Image (tube, rainbow, N blue to C red; front, side, top):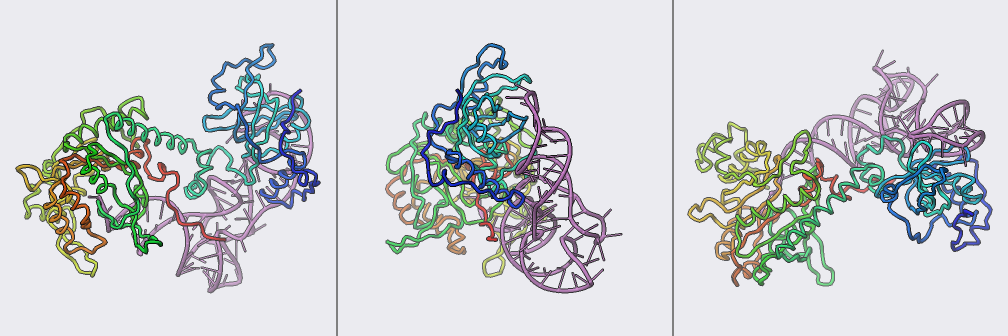
Length: 519
RNA sequence: GCCCCGCUAGCUCAAUUGGCAGAGCAGCUGACUCUUAAUCAGCGGGUUGAAGGUUCGAGUCCUUCGCGGGGCACCA
């Protein structure tokens, strides 16, 4: 005889209290649901549920063979648990759509089949409630795969109404402030969360297989270094010490190279106290890795292999969609010298100072920078070159394309190219104007490194300096860091690209928002 | 930090030139044991993001503020 599960801890004071519903016409949605909650308790059923073993993922249940009910063949008995996202009443039978993270299935609850108590509880179900159902899996007369409920277990009442209708949730702010609902009612949100994990796992597997050691380095640091960005400030009480949150992973990892860990990487959160946009979140995830006795070429091969593996993890083909366009990740990726691209699109030699200035004027790129004091200073030549590159060349880089041999002044942590001291051994991988990866032959000469740091510091406020002088890092270099290749990849941007997401908010489950206003 | 746009019922959206705040879904009551965006009959539901102003009259016009979106700036 089908029964409702009532082997729950009874709260006699609650269950013996007679429910005294206020007239529904005077209630709002939350009050109606609270009233139903009391009625459920009054039936002796715990509306908050408890452990529920043996349920199977809904997708797995749906894959079982299904015969039409009442044809003499008994289908398999299954248990499922999930959220009620659809409800249709047909007299003495309810048809529910029950959702879990693997899929949806119809559940049929008939008054005759579920028993008196079960039916009473079924009548108190709301959209958004969590239930467990055990019953035969088969098909209705209409051919819909269905679990025909023999027992119903209340797992949790939802006291708030859920979004309805097949329009789903469209208000961006509502989705972000109710991400848990977005995961349920916007299919792509959950899918992208899964794809992000797949990509991260692929990266780890790929690097682990090549002998890279994954490490964790401090988030709290005395000096923010390794990149140019404003840090978040914080404070350690017991030490009476001001600290910052890291803005890059670079310097601690290089210390590990000195320490003999030849292949090392970290995937970690970094924090930059800057503007928020569709491609910037104040906290984001970086991959940085270093390979002793390697160089730029080592990193290029590694990057290509890594990307091909990540694409394979989320796509059946090497060509993936990006908006109206596509990106083809079939190796080898295109390679282009920075200076050649500059000449091709800007139309002059990037080392010809006069010509670059003329071109900057032609493309309306400002020749000066505003200083903090409100004045202006003329841009350094290489900065101007870089601005022109960003303005004129980048839009053409649909990629994937490795751009290499950067102007040296732009790269304080990079080794100069042998025989061409104006160039640095650096590449960036571009895809549709996005910088996906950034790699160097690392500078391991402490004397040059210190001089570069000091030069960067001149004329810049402490906060805005490209790379703050980290004496301890210089000391580490002085003990001998092996020549090495290094690579950085912005994980969020990578996931955006591979999941065809045009805002970083689609690949970060909880992007930073201002707190909601009270009242 | 600057500019533009948006904010109306639980959700998705209407509301003409400034003139009675509406619909679908959800909710409530009722009918129906094969529905599936169920259907049918009926009923509720609002400080139009907040505060001020103009006006006989404001969802609509003005000011300030809040939150979000887009763009710019910042940002290796």
